[in-house]
Structures are given as structure tokens and as C-alpha cells.
Length: 335
Image (cartoon, rainbow, N blue to C red; front, side, top):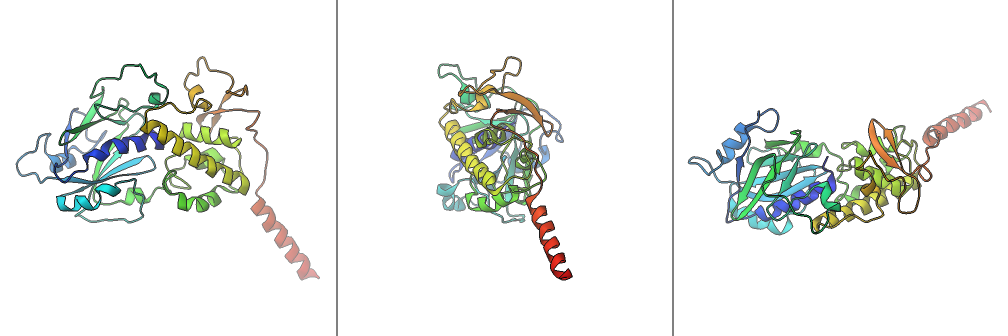
């Protein structure tokens, strides 16, 4: 499943489509049921059936935004507004609802295997470990269901396993339901760190919850983060120090992964990311010679180094302090 680093790269590929000169057009290239992929009626009402048709109003792309694993495109009919945003079209994670019939947003949900590609760039997880001399696949890739076009720019939305979705909305409610973004909302990291501390759920389950502490972190990212933090994925009741370490590693892993994908370079060679994909013939140790093992955590496969990621039995320090205060209070009352 594409996680924040991949989805951020998909967002970057769509930035050249922001233009006041050329409207955005969308065309459907597959004949699949509306309920599975997207609302054919919604897209046809905005863009016609592929070519610009009579009676269809032009839509210009004002911004390409991302929060967590969700991309949303802000479409406008007044092209004079494009100049106000073209230089600031970075990932937007504001909390405004913008529930207004004048606002049109195109939501892109990648699902398990969805991706955005252009003739120059086709990003997948494999990109991070692809050999430089390997032949790139043709464009559009197989299983393409939607084509974007603006002037000379063209991009595709493909999805082999068909769990992705494209929806047209007039509101950002879906965006606002997500927790702060794990890459861009660093100013909210203190509050997020507090949410990780002293929790009864395992830390991996917390980090995978897109609506609780942070959004955008998926299975391979959380394994990398916890490996670097030396914390077991099922560990409960984390200390403040452990949570601070996790937040530090989140920032590092996310920024590094985004930078690598943006430049189509491999992830760092010491990441366990490279060792997790071949479960039939896995490498048994990391670059430091530490044994690695696959374990199940909250129903998800996790790759860990058992010698540095040890699970310990703990109880809630908050509960202990509460019980202790009540005991002290009772003793004082008796006195």
C-alpha cells in the first residue's frame, strides 16, 4: 500500500498541472463499475467524457494537496485565481472545512496499489531499490483507469488491485477527520507525542491509526521507525523519552524517504526496508549482523530485530500515580 513518502511523490508529479493557461481535463480509460472506483457521473459532469465537450465548464487546477495518504486537488472555474497559489502549492493540511458549492475537490485514494505516473516518472515501492540501468515501463502503465491532462502535461492513475477511489466533493471534511500529517505538521508533534505516551494499545497499532496521533504512516514505515527507535511494535505504556525518540525517527524516516523518491534514489542501505519483501528467502540479519525476524503485530506482518526490540511487561504509570495519590489522600483524611 502506498504510504506517505510515495503519496507525496505522486502529489509532486501533479504540480505541473497547475496552470492559468490550460484547463485540467480528465478522461476515463476503463469500463469499471462506479461503486468500485469512482463516480463516473461526477467526473463526467465536470469534464465530459474525455474530450472537452460543449456545455462543460472549464476547470483549472488551483492546488495539489496532501494529508496523510490522501491527495486532493482544488479545482476552480476562475483561472485568475491560479496566480495566487501556483508558487505555494505545497501539501496543505489546514483545518478549514470549506463546505461550499463553489469549491470543488477531487480526492485521490490510492488504496492498496494505486499510483500516479507520468511519461517521465513511474514511482512504486520498487523505485527505491531499482537498478539505474533497469528499463522503465511504458506509459500509461497497465491497469490505468484515469488520465489527467493540462497543456502538454499528462499523468495517469493506475490501480491493479482496484481498491483505490476517486471522488468529487465540495467539502474537506474527509481531510479534517485525519490526524496531523507525519511530514508537514511538525508544529503539532508535541501534542502527538503526548498521545503516544502511556497508552494501553501497542505502539504500532497507535501509529497505524490514521485518525489518532499522526496520518500517513503505514506498515513498512512504522517498522522502520520502531527498528530505529529500538522499540517492539507491541510495546505498551511508553515513557515520554521513548515517545520523543519515536517522533524524532518519524521526522527522519519521512523526510529521508520523500527525498529519495523525489530524486528516484534508493533508500539508505542500512534500512530494513530492503530486507522485508522476500519472505520466502529472507536475509536473517541487518547490516550490523543483528538477527531479524518476522512477527505478527495487530494482524500485520512486522520485521524486527529481537535483540534490540524487546517487549517488556509494564503497567500504566498514570494509573499508578492516580492510585498512589488516592491512597495518600485517604491516609491524610484518617489522620
